[in-house]
Image 1 (cartoon, one colour):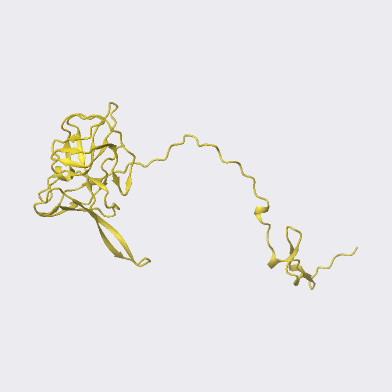
Image 2 (cartoon, rainbow, N blue to C red; image 1 turned 90 degrees about the vertical axis):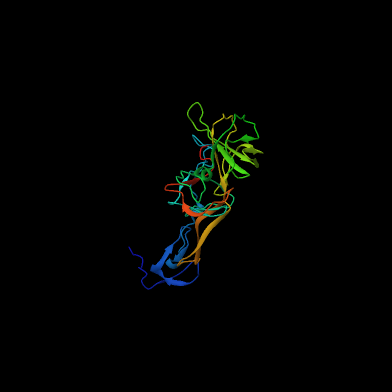
Length: 264
């Protein structure tokens, strides 16, 4: 019985290019074509796609998308700077706030430049009961609150859960806030969060105000990559109702800054 030649010196014609190649370097493709190994192409996977199942109709225990309330952040030691005018400079490295954000200052331990702690924190109490639809609110002392802005009224329900209400007001006459929009929310880091719920509040309830970010303090930092310069956020400026009496840096240790209301 005869055997086939090993083809050591034979040539074969490629079915793809029509060129002659060493016989022993030829391979056969999935479609039966005889081609040189340099011309070989595997079978395209899309010619035989793997079967897939349909997407499920729904998720178990699905939850709606929502924007969580932000929390307060610690400030550096003695973060406040007064300059004998109504500008209050606040050191807040990498705070990433935006102009027109509403910020609330807390845990301030010492006055700065003659500005009282209660003024910096804009803290007071409610003077008289209010209903859920009242559009004017009387404060015990509102003399240092901005002429427009946001306040939060602290309230704890019968289950011991905070149900604080954020209120926007458009005017202030001495201690009375007017043009109140109930159950709203204030912007923070460029985001306005879910509205709160308007409710009744009793006389003596704690009230806290907020400052609007008037401008930002930034520094251009030179780096080694591209872009060559980057912007570093150093802090912000807010406007006081009454001017500070002196230039001073202070406020104490572990002062915090945050949104008007961090309790939904």
